[in-house]
Length: 161
Image (cartoon, rainbow, N blue to C red; front, side):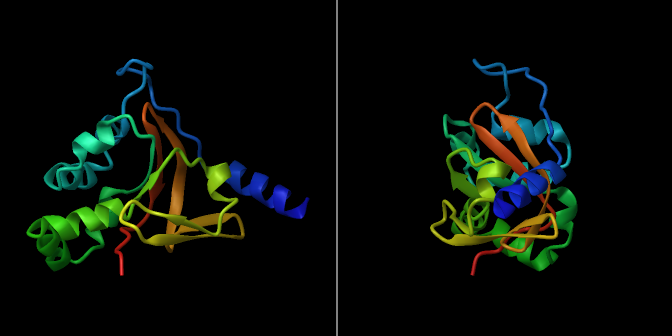
């Protein structure tokens, strides 16, 4: 019962964002369209396109994306971003480290200790004092709906080991 109450409290503490329905058969935008229209994921969307992953993340999915904001990318050393921009395989590995197969909501996420990403590695899930983190990045907004999955906004870029 205590664990259930903790999960409910954490889910309640995360912001729920509803994306206006404007595209797609279901009336919602896909993950790439949703991220692009939000205005705070310009770097992420540009890198997804550069890596050749836009078609995949626009496809049927479903996917769960932990989306670093432009402010999160600004914290990454420019040399690291430049190196990734010149190595498509490494860029894909970093971006797929932010993606899960399936639609994993905040409530479902908080029932797990780790999740496996599409690059094959796992991320640790933690909830401490109502603050949820994934791979050490704080989830600042959860459950942004898209036609082919869900987006959780995070405050830093996850770099695989």
